[in-house]
Length: 424
Image: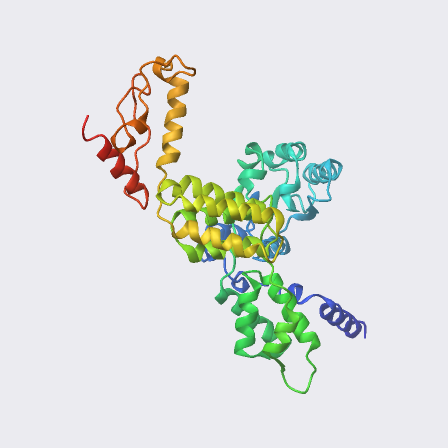
C-alpha cells in the first residue's frame, strides 16, 4: 500500500515540475547540440562517463544546456554536490562549503570528493575568486562554473588557469526540433509543421525559451481525446516577444556593434541594416548608434564621398531630438548611405601620420611669409595666379601625409593635385 502511495506522490511531483525539468537529459545522447564537446570520443564526454570531471567553466548563451549538463554530471557522480549562485553567495558561504569539503576528506567520508556547481560565476569579484583558488588548485573541491559571459574577461587568470574552459554554442534549428520531438513523446502531443517552424525560429537558439512556450501551449490546449494538437495560432499566442541576447555591458553588445561597423565599412547595406535593427529592437541608445555611424563616415568613407559625414551628422542630431520609432528612419538612411558609399581612409591615415610627425619628427618653424600680421613679405596670394594655385614653401622640410585614393570623389582630388604640380 505504501508503495502505491509513494508512486502516486512521485507521479504528482513529476507532473508539477516545469517541462524543462521533466525533459532534463537522462543520458548524454539526450543532449541536443554541443557535439563539439559532447560527441563520442570527446574529452568532456570521456571525463563524464568515467566520473573524472575536473574543475571547469561552461560558458555560452542562455538555454543551451550548461546547467542541464552540470546537473547531469552531479546526478552521476559519487561526490557530494553543492549548488551555489554567485549573485547571492558571499565569501562566508564559500568558506563554509570549503570547510565541509575539507572535513569530508579528513574524516574519510564515503563521499570524500566535493563537486560545487557555481551558477553565474562572472558575478564573483576578485576577492571571492581568490577564496576559491587554493581549494580548486589542491583538488579539495571540483568546481564547475556556469556563465553567459566570456570567462577570459570575468575570471582572473590565476583561477582560470586551473579550469578547463568549454564553450557552449547557440542551438541550431535541428537541435531545437530534436527537443520538441522528445517532448512530444513524453507529453503526448502533435505540433503542426508551421507551428514548429515558428516556435524554433522565435526561440533564437534558446531551449529554455522554447520549452517554456511549448509548456504554455500544452497546458492551454484542451484535451479532446488522443494526442493534443498544437497549432500555429496556439504557439504564436504562447511565445512572448522574441528575446534578443543583448546586454549593454556584455559581450553581445560589443559583438553586435562591431558587426554593424564592419558591415558599413565592408559596403554591405543589408547586413548593416540588420545589425542596426538588432540594436534598436534590443533597446540600444540611438545616440550611441548615431555616433558610430558618424565615426565610420569620417574614418572609412572620408573624402571618397564627403556627403556621408553630412548625412551622419544629421542622423546624430535626429537621435538627440527623436525617440523610437521615428529615429529608426534617419539612422537607417545614414547607415545605408555610409555602407553604399565608396571608401577611403586616406584622411584618417593623413592626420595620424601628421600627429606622429608632430610628436616624433623635427620641430618646424612657420616660414616668415606665412606668419600672422602685415610684415609677411614674400607671401604669394594664390588667387592672383592661374588656376588659383602658386608654388611656395608652406612647410619646412616638406613631407607627404595625405595620399588620395582612386575611390569616388577622392579620385577628383587626386587628379587635381597631380595636375597642379605637373608644371613647376
